[in-house]
Image (cartoon, rainbow, N blue to C red; front, side, top):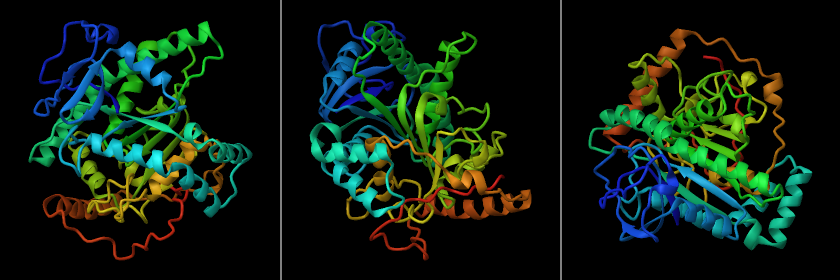
Length: 424
C-alpha cells in the first residue's frame, strides 16, 4: 500500500529541501524506515512510501510515487485522511493502515456488487450517466471498479489525556495542513498542469478524498494555504483537482463551507462534495465545548450538518446519518464510515462508494429549494450543548455507553436522507 506522510521516521529524514518533494531522498532507491510514533510533530515536508507491514515500510522518491500510481491499472485513487489520535500501527484491530486496508479490501472484494445492489434497492433510479457506469462495472469489473486507497498519515498526538490531545491535535492538524500537505496539492497541481500542456488527452487518474473527523481540518487548512499560495490575486481560476470529497463526521465549524468561510475553497477543488453528519455524535459534542474555550461558538459540520443548506455551493450534498452512527460499535457514534459489527461494508461506505464508482453528478436536492430553516434560539443551543456533552464525556471516561434504544436494525439500510438543516 502506498502512503504519504509528514511524520518523522526513527531513521531520521534524509538530507534535502523538505519543501521540494523531489529532493527528499538523495539515494538511488527506496530505504527501509519505521514510524516514530512518539513524535507527534510534523516534519514540515512530505515523504512517500510503500507499506507492506509493520516491519517492512519503504520510503520512496516523490517522482517514483507518482509514476507508480499512474501506472496502476486502477483508474481511481482515494486519499484517506484519518482523524486525531490515530497512529500508523497500533494493533491488528486499530491503526491508520488497518483502516486503510479495510477500505481497500471493501473496494477490491465488494464494491462492484455493492454499488449495483445499492442502485437497485434505493430509488430514484440512477441517472443515465450512472446507468452507463454500472454497465461498465458489470462488463469490466477488474479495471473499472478498482480504487487504489492511499492513506495520508499526518502527524498527530496520542496520549492518555484525551482533552489535552484535542488541543494539541488541532494545532498539529493546522501545521500538517499548512506546512506539509499543501505541498502535495501544489505538486499535483503543477504536475497536472504540465502534463495537460504536453498532452491534452493525458489519462489522469480520478482522485477522491475521504476525510474523517479532524482529518477534515487538515485538508481544509491545506486547501486554503494552496489557494493563497497559487491562486489568490493571480487571476487564475481555482483548478478542479478532485472528483469527490467525502467529509465524514467533519470536525469543522458548521458554516465553514458557506460563502467565503474557512472551508469554502473545498467545493471549488472538487466536482462533488458529500457531507455526512450525525446530530447525536458525542465526540463532536465534546469538540463544540473545546472550541468554545477558543472563542468559536459554532456547532460542528459533522454533527449538525451545514448551518444553512440554501447557502451551500451547488455541488455540495449533506446526508443525515443519525439513524445509523451507533450501529458500528463506537459508543460515541463518531466512527461509522467503515464496517458494521459483522465486518461487512457499512451503509456509509456503500453510499460514498456509489458516488466514487459511478461518478453520479445528479445533485438535485428538493430540500435545498423547499426547506425553510427554523429559527433556533440560543437557549436551545445551550441546552442541547449541555445535554450532548454529558453524553460525550461519559463516553470518554466510561466508553461503554449503550446503543440508542430507538436504533433500527440494519438489515437493509436506507441511504441517509438529504438533511433538512436548521440555522443555528
